[in-house]
Amino acid sequence: MTGVRPKKHLGQHFLTDKATAKRIADTLMLEGVDSLLEVGPGTGMLTGFLLEKGVPDFRVIEIDNESVEYLNSAYPELDIIKGDFLKYDLNANFESKVAIIGNFPFNISSQIFFKVLENRDKVSQLAGMIQKEVAERIVAGPGSKTYGILSVLLKYYYNIEYLFTVPPDVFKPRPKVEAAVIRMSRNDSTGPACDEKLLKRVVKATFNHRRKMIRNSIRSAFDIGEEQMNLFKLRPEQIDLDDFVNLTNWVEEVLNKK
Ligand code: SAH
Image (tube, rainbow, N blue to C red; front, top):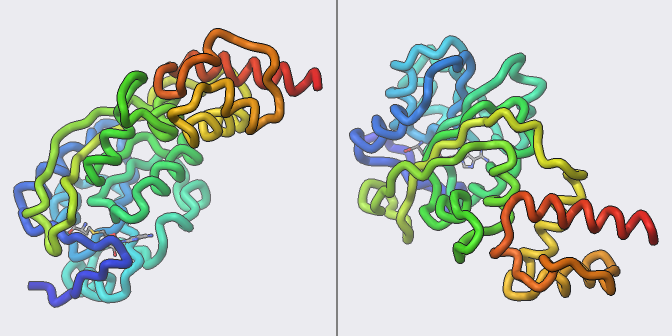
């Protein structure tokens, strides 16, 4: 036992099963990876297996003092950053691309993905564990109930795979939900063929009212909308990445004319 008490407000669910930890570490595609950052190492269950991978620049970032102290004694050679991953400046701290891995703190998993999105030219790959529900949301495509903001935005830049489901009984404390391991790797795309900030606003405005027709959400969010496109009669969960780009370009045109 490590003696570290799990803290709920930090999303701490420590893995107790070595085989699962190894399986997660093995999802990393090592080719071309020179820098690796583990988010939330906790008591190091995954860290041990990651050290064996021999990535030249391997660091871990952990917010919990007690875990950091434990890791310092258990792994004296480990490069430990004590701090908040959400505040850690990836561009300033990594010269070249970095892969990110972890049994992520479930309470901030969406924020982790938004951060990756912002740093997409730095983050070549992300692999790890999140709540199953969030994993499903990320991999979903149009027509699926869980298709949402992150599924749309991440797919412009990353190829995403749902790898396997993990039951609650391999964690301490047990989470209320199942977990899942996913992997995302950066594709060649330079991004959507439209103004990206506007795209984000369009995607958010429509998914904030996912049961409404796009027409209504766009009208109230941008104060426009007598003009019509066919897409406007659909709901956001029915349209794909290209449709969102077309919609964004249309909104931009109308806004410019106003
Ligand atoms: N990898 C460990 C712990 C997973 S629990 C294992 O598999 O057993 C999630 C870990 O993320 C906890 O150790 C928690 O303290 C840490 N954490 C929570 N929020 C964080 C943040 N913002 N930045 C870095 N680490 C964080």
